[in-house]
Amino acid sequence: MNVAERIKFNDDGLVCAVVVDHESNDVLMVAWMNAEALELTLTTRRGTYFSRSRGKLWVKGETSGHVQHVREVRHDCDADTLLVRVVQEGPACHTGTRTCFDTDARRLL
Amino acid sequence: MNVAERIKFNDDGLVCAVVVDHESNDVLMVAWMNAEALELTLTTRRGTYFSRSRGKLWVKGETSGHVQHVREVRHDCDADTLLVRVVQEGPACHTGTRTCFDTDARRLL
Image (spheres, rainbow over the protein chains, first blue to last red):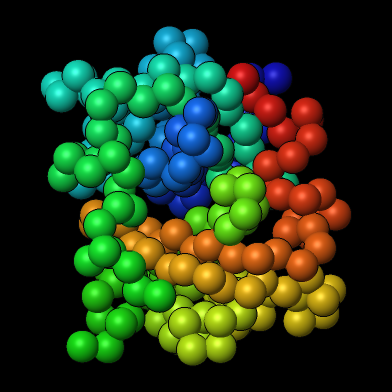
């Protein structure tokens, strides 16, 4: 069976991907994949996503150089979420912070 | 400003919440919150979500006893994803595994 067939994509053909730093275990970012992005992530081992705002595939770091070397990919019990473990080059966040959840301004509790 | 007003909920009024074990840093599960679930999570400090399948609020562990004591909540750079750090009582997954991503059968790479 094709790997992507094991995944339950939503009505927009997307699945949520939680991206974790393979060494620190910190959550770096959350993005979305369609079946093609998932296949490319698995075969090229570069974090590849689907941009909902631009409506197209997006290889993380293709312009910034902050690529992700993918070490492991898992799905959850419902097969509707992915956990992607990566070695991240440079900051994961487009704002320049190490993760997308850094800075006190992003803290609610 | 109301905390929930800082968050960009999707067209269904929901935001994705990544739930992390406060001690091990492992991703335990991914669930969804509406504004009410977020407010309850912040005020009661029990992980509270919105069940998309049942269409109603759901306090994690209300039947199983596997409650989540919430230690920290952050949003990401786009304010459309939450990171919830918890002390988890018992297994986080309804299948009985510690996290929703455990077991080799859930591994794609």
